[in-house]
Length: 326
Image 1: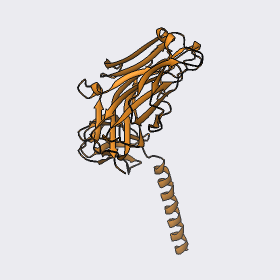
Image 2: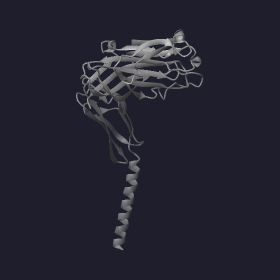
Image 3: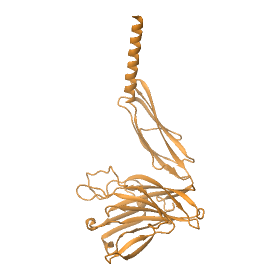
Image 4: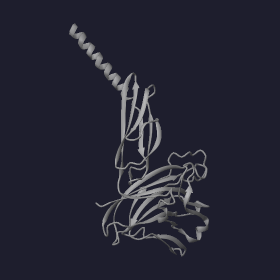
């Protein structure tokens, strides 16, 4: 009987432990921990953003980011400027039913040699870029309001950036919309006739215009191109004899392209107001392109925006390019 009681006691103890462990496993905090950019150049800033939701009833909750940040609130952002590639760790501590709960998340910000164009600063390299628009009938230009301006205040975000926007007075009459707005820059000083893997990262703010009473938002595709020729505007007659404004060299065989994002439109924008501008939020996207320089160690980098609806408003905050020989 003694052995039976001991065995039963142990069984009940194990059962209780499993119940507690099962209960605690469902009490872990929910963590979102991201970086605005995960690849930057030396001296460049980026932002860490986090949100931690602790289990109901938990106590003595602490959130900490290391290195260099310390104890923080349960949600927020912080600007960082790592000198070298750094792995940041977000740690949480809480007590649930008297038991300590420790959870952590990690992310790495890589620091590599490259180029950083800061469009929030008029002296940050924006003067090196050329901005333009194409892919529309020349006779329809008066029906558009195009803007490609530097140093324009970004609504809601407190800084100025490059504004690229298109506004057609009657979008429904545009039968085949391929309007493109783009910025291009020459990168020099690389090895002549050399292969490179180019990682391109763009930070932007967007709130696409809404059309109609249902507040549907257009898709805005963002593409990156790297080629040996500068994109140039050309006006020539199309198959109907109408003058069409196009951009040369983006479709050249030597020009490589990659989709930065199939749609940079804000997914969670408030759709109960149906206003013209919506709410602007900041995000980033990146891609890699394998290419080759010309005999002078040069190529052209182009960032292009293509909306499904010829109305859009996008602010470009920065472009980062990392060049690595494979």
